[in-house]
Length: 251
Image (cartoon, rainbow, N blue to C red; front, side, top):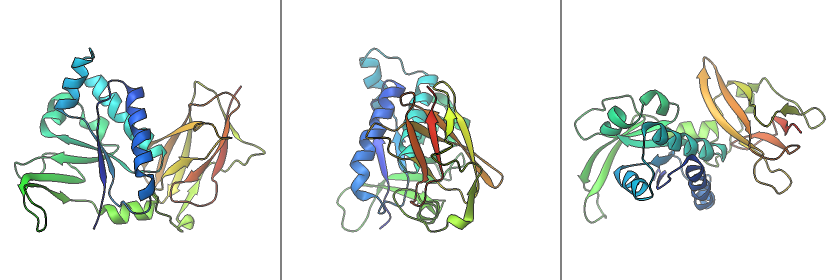
């Protein structure tokens, strides 16, 4: 059976969304190498009602920042990220061009999907042998098991190191120095692999890794300092393998 996950969010700020992603990753830790569908950020009407009750108005900018914070954080921990949404949200509550950098799981019960998506939820009243009551039904348009295994997401290891090359290979004797208020862009040419930040002396991750975009045959990643000045960490393929390069926060 193919398995993924979704996290129903009650975040009211990007920081809370990142914290939710961190807890989500902890929950999923025992299932590394077993889940072969993405981990989706699920923000819906109940999320907005909760936000209002906390005195926070859910604007378009806030919704998008929550999705971005969660997806960036969960991907920095090696899980392929996606957003679960519906037509109302896509048309009225956030912008498709912001969300399309991640996988989209679209609830659309009116026929074919109105926008390009990796998976469509087509019904909430389906039936499956062995399950009592209604079941949500979905169609996947992307071969996620192959994509996630081949790119080394979700704890799957890949031995296909010869299929990609990094434009940055600095070792510990010559680390990439990144100012605390700056970012560094690394270019991975070939296979679209995930990246993760290694440990840094028992401290929280020194860098947040953000998959920026696919550019022809290459993927651009932003390496963003989130640790303390002087903190150093290795950057590795999400699917396991040798360190790609070492980065240090200036200071």
